[in-house]
Length: 466
Image (cartoon, rainbow, N blue to C red; front, side, top):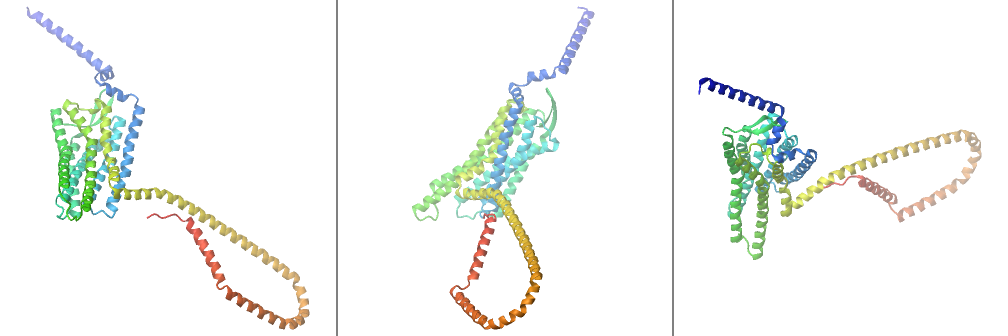
């Protein structure tokens, strides 16, 4: 084979490569959407269809979580931090658990809901850094608080004669919980970045960027976070509660004299442990599907969870978020004291609207009463003025006639003077007798009138609730 034939074949290969590259570039420029549809999974296409109905469903379920969580956890915080039992260490931990749930409700769920509905990240760089930080801190604070509650219960039941931790010590522990939660969640904030992608449309995403190789570091980070934030504290809590149950089952109550006292104390301990264990199990059930989903996707090497079965991700995320509104219902279900106090607070909240309506009614009645008084005063003054004017006219008309009759009546007055003295003495005697028979009659009628007026005023005032 000659050199010229070899060179000719090389030129033909170059021409073929140029043609294929030009064709591929033209396809990529003109048919970008078709290529995107080819690699996009079927569930991601279904996620884009019926967007109005899907968005309405998503808004309804997430808004339900937000409303129930705000209402329930605010009542829990009000009972714990303003009630008579605020110095109890367990109540402080329960209040801290409600604070972490409120943090998830206020700071995380609205941002996440915005990202889901927009299928984009319109909130900027700063909130992209804050969203994973808020979520990680809330989850870590909840799991660590559950572990500290288990430790506190173990200390009370296993060592009942030892002094319990003080109020300040419990506050220091809560500060330690939040500091640890911040340290564990800060790497999420460091690795979160806003990225621009072009698939079938221009998309801005808030994603976590790992060092290369991406999938290996992602798997390592997911396993470490799963162990420190979820599996580790909850495993410790489960082990402690198993030990507590064994202690309660095998030990007699200290200080109990009769069998009834032993049974009563054991039932009281079982009630508290049962409530706390159900809180722990509920948290595990809510967050376990989401952790399994992320672990499975990281093991597959999937970088964007929304490109693979987004409906499954939405269901797992909704279950995880629903953990923030479960605890108040558990407290009301299993704790009689909490149920009574929560019921009183609920009645107080419902009475606010009633008090406002009663205030409006009382203001209306008072205003109408004042108007009636002013009208009656005006009518009385007009009547007095009219009678005075008529009397003055009569005085001027009959004045002259009276002057003529003065001389005629003087003689009659002298004759009748003795008779008037007798009649006046008789009338004063009768008045004295009547006053002896019915004393303080005028005072009684006045008191009756004042009582009726006071009763009318009290009927218009709003009720007060303690």
